[in-house]
Image 1 (cartoon, chains in turn green, brown):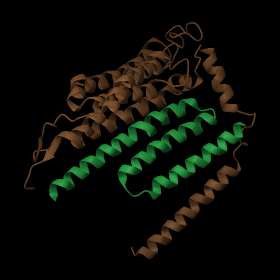
Image 2 (cartoon, rainbow over the protein chains, first blue to last red):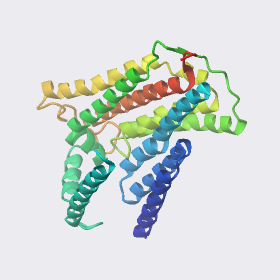
Image 3 (cartoon, rainbow over the protein chains, first blue to last red):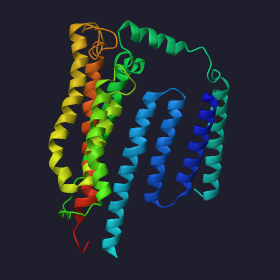
Image 4 (spheres, one colour):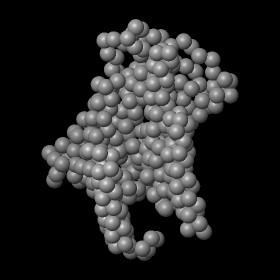
Amino acid sequence: MADAVIVVALVLVAGCATVAVAVRDPARQALVLAVLGVVLAVLFTAVQAPDVALSQLAVGGALTPLLLLLSVRKVKRRKGRER
Amino acid sequence: MTPRTRLLLVLVGGAGIAALLVAACLRLPDFGGDSHPYGDRAVAASLARQTANTIASVNFDQRAFDTLGEMTILFAAVVGCVVLLRQTRDEHRARPEPADVARPVRRYALIVLPVALVTGLYVIAHGQLSPGGGFQGGVVAATSLHLLYLGADYRALERIRPVGMYEVGDALSASAYLITGLAGLIGSAAFLANTLLPYGTFNTLSSGGTVPLLNAAVGMEVACAVVVLLARFLDQAVEIEEESGK
């Protein structure tokens, strides 16, 4: 049973990571990255590392996508002014 | 360097890393096995000092010096960001207009904000007892404040978040970690040695000697650092504009 959860989590991580690379729009990439962070947290919980899972959830699921979205907004704003 | 030689170089380097990784993985212990030499020793050491969460014991007692390094890296990274993202001479600040927020978003953000903030503080306070600790709780508490930006607007966020105070808090908590370490050097055996304070009763908030103190210092440091970091990014994304005509 535990092995099945680990396998499912691993497949989801691989899938999300591939989508994150395949998506080319940075704003969408940030959202996929947030999903990847949550899935990675599930994987870490499944392999009994709740401490790391919590870090991953907070940093990978919330902080990194937020910083990315803010950077995208800054760049887009500058482009909009140049046009 | 032509693209061809560059590709060749990447292939050679990649093949080398792949070979080393495969060689290392072949010698790993089996997945899910019973033998955990490092884990057994770490658990014994953490139980001897009445720390219920072995990870916290590893982070703030057995490897407290490593954590000092990690904390310093975060501190230096935030200082670097503050310097890089400052307002330069050819930029000016434009007050952002108050924006309309959809009612469900506002309701959700304002309900979740206090819950997330208390969760973050809980995770920091119980770092020595249950999974989590200063780093995880600090990030949760700091990001939860920014729900106010989603639920209300940028000005509301600025009112509850005087960045200067958080910069001072960041430096103070980093110093608090160092001073706790120095106290170990003066009062007992070595820098960051956890032999100064009584270990307390197992599985209570005050157990573990200096572990809860160092944990709290890291929690405050991370929370302040993340708030300052996000404030600089928000400044750039929302407020700071380049002068027109450039």
